[in-house]
Amino acid sequence: MCGILGQITSKPIDQNEFRKTLLLMNHRGPDDNGVYFDKNLAFGHTRLSILDLSNQAHQPMISTHKDYTLVYNGEIYNFAEIKRELEEKGHSFHSHSDTEVILNGFIEYQEEIVNKLNGMFAFAIYNKNNNDVFLARDRSGIKPLYYYNKENDFSFSSEIKALKCFSSKINLEAKILFLLLGSVPEPMTIYENILMFPAGHYAYYSNGKLKTTRFSEYQYETKITRPYHEIVQDVSDLLHKSIKRHLISDAPIGTFLSGGLDSSAITAIAAQYRDNLQTLSLVFEEKNLSEEYYQNLLVKRYNTDHTSFLVDESIFLASIEEFMASFDQPSIDGLNTFFVAKAARESGLKTVLSGVGGDEIFYGYPSFKNAKTLNFLAKLPSFIIRGLQIPHKYKKLELLHIENELASYLPTRGIFSPTEIAGFLGVDIDFVYKTIARLWEEYNSSHIKALDDKVSFFELNLYMKNQLLRDTDTFGMANSLEIRVPFLDKELVDYVLKIKPEEKYARNINKIILADASRSLVPNEVINRPKMGFTLPFEYWFRKNIHKFDLDDNIKNKFLNKQLHWSRVWALLILSRYDEKL
Image 1 (cartoon, rainbow, N blue to C red):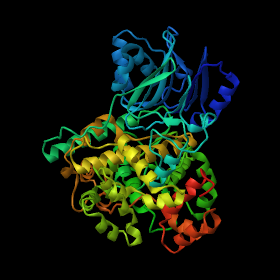
Image 2: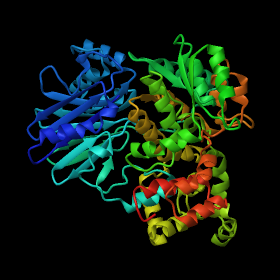
Image 3: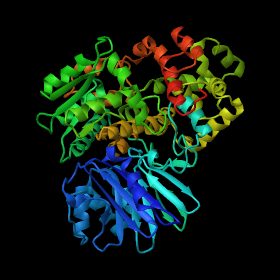
């Protein structure tokens, strides 16, 4: 896991300045760094050594004949199979790294190599023969890749901070969408002219132009028609394969254990393949919010090498500034990831497995249960919807006026209503609605048949990709920690998304297919427990100390009078770092 940086310019590159910029991402790769310069091109890399800890895996990696140069961030879990295939075709290898597999794979297959990769990745390859650069990013967007492209100057990076010299002006549409969603949806970022390279795409940059092509996206058809018990067995087999692959590491590795079904299933299966598995949990003094009881069930059953990290009010307050300084652009979430990543690194781990993705593919969020009701309400006359909005907690029902399928999703997942957003930012409400309409153009779900699958599409593409995975990368890398997400294994996701939605629901058990697939390994108390969001006692601590935060007095009073949910006040606090007027 690493940080990558590249520049292709029309002017000579200041090599010293480039090296300084690269060091802004030293936290992503404190084990090694390297640079490559050729004409008006520069590649840089900071390395966190996970596979092949030797210098043979150093980057930028140059091919045997010196005509291709690669910088890469990620992990490819099927690299051994691809390597054997390439060796049969005559390629030789000088390392045991997945980096060299990508490099030789591109030399052999060109852009088609991306369809063979099962893992998380963002990489760039310079072809010296024709002076172009190839870029690619994994389908789920697990690994970030930002870029700036203007007037024959092209730069890319794993983090925005390395590109802010090109643009620091705040994007108004990004602020609107942050207040709507709690994150800034790609391809835009909070800064104008700095974009996120789209997930599931590759591109060639040549002669000042970037030509982008989609190579992969989530598929929900054709549905699997096998008996339920066979589907459960298939999912169990795929989970075992995925987790076994994700445990490949030459550095210390463990699992996050929250006590919920997702992390418990990963931990239980990982314990089948790793003796004395390391596990890590957050615990709290507020026992009603702590999941320590469920965590300990797994720890005792599998005798894991467990570390519990206590987060209390004083740690929360002392960490706010460091937390906010860690991210490039606003996110309403991430504090939990920030604390658990810090604890993991302090315990000596370099790599951990996380349960991100489980709710999105096994349909565990409230948004799935609410979609049918919202879809019905969206068809009602406007005056009825306005009547429903009168109680404060139903203000977000204004989003039912959206004339597309987001109307069945955003009232559940949204943070503020369009009217509230317009008021906070001082913009015309029509501009807010036009911004949401452009969001639909980017995240159009019309090609999907079932309503539940449409919600899954939004959860995977809007919420998980832009918030959960971005937070996972940001706060993991801030602590020089690689976080892996086995629920997003390509084979597993491709199978689970083609299971009929009705198979994924049970009256009393959330994520029934995952529960049944791991039932022999996970305690019944975990399977049968009510779903509990991993929120920590933030609201209590935040409310108690609200006077310490720089927020408008009117907002503070509404929060204290319980007219604003803590997450909404938190969103305004986060955004205030990007706009002094809030």
